[in-house]
Image (cartoon, rainbow, N blue to C red; front, side, top):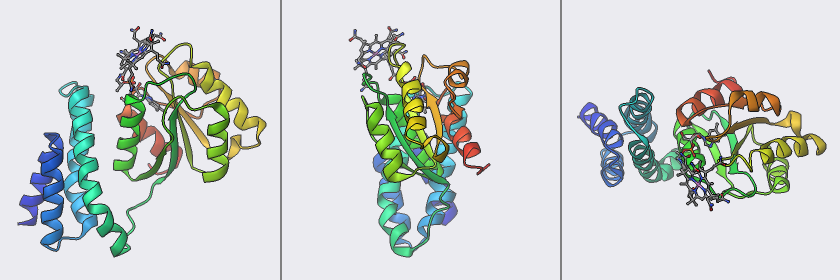
Amino acid sequence: MSDDLYAQMKQAVIDGEAEAAAALAQKALDAGLPAVDILDEGFVKGIEEVGDLFARGEFFLPELVQGAEAMKAAVAVLQPALDASGAERKALGTAVAGTVAGDIHEIGKTIVCSMLSAAGFTVTDVGCDVPVEAFVEKVREMQPDLLLLSALLTTTMPNQQKTIAALKDAGLRDAVKVMIGGAPTTRAWADEIGADGYAEDAIEAVAAAKALVGAE
Ligand code: B12
């Protein structure tokens, strides 16, 4: 019976059915299944499949977003049980993420955050139009493993560079791995500004983030 439920969970994420995903999570908890198993055997399998479908060009952005939303809905139901059981999910690391100053494009950054959370990172999303100094302060305060900087405008890309320079000035550059992304950015730009990582999309971002924290 649990195998059947896990299969339904996987399918709910693939179908982007947030309400169904939340209901299945509750049903599985009520049936006494461990929250960690529900997550790993059910919903994570779904989001992995969504990622594969997207990478193969069979799914497009709306399906990716809906899959991530369904995953988030399930995680929200499971979170108290996960906390109460003390069963720590395999924590891969911590990340602070935001869109740089002058830039209010946040959809891609939010998807990257969802995917990283789903993969096991603890992510603090500091929003969009984030001033350079605010990123530096967050890094000082939270000491995350990763800082993710998104930019969607050619005019705001330089703020990724400025943030990295400001981290250096604050003596924090070696304390955090900086990953950049956003449609106009490239690996060459990441190299030029001394970022530690770059990814073209949210799926690649998970792999790159794992590599940066030595998780895979
Ligand atoms: C939606 C959108 C908006 C929305 C944003 C809503 C919101 N809340 O986010 C609104 C309407 C507000 C907007 C405003 C503007 N926009 Co606009 N916008 C877009 C549009 C159509 C889609 C962006 C998007 O969400 N894509 C979907 C997401 C999922 O993709 P993504 O952002 O690229 O993210 C993926 C990857 O890049 C990567 N990624 C993203 N961030 C990060 C971070 C890290 C660390 C990593 C590893 C990976 C990563 O992973 C994501 C998921 O796979 C683009 C066109 C386009 N094709 O990109 C124009 C576009 C970006 N906008 C553009 C412009 C010009 C503007 C405006 C200046 C328009 C104006 N004259 O007012 C304003 C600027 C406002 C501002 N100050 O920021 C131009 C930019 C041109 C340029 N070269 O700079 C574009 C390219 C449109 C165009 N073809 O002209 N925009």
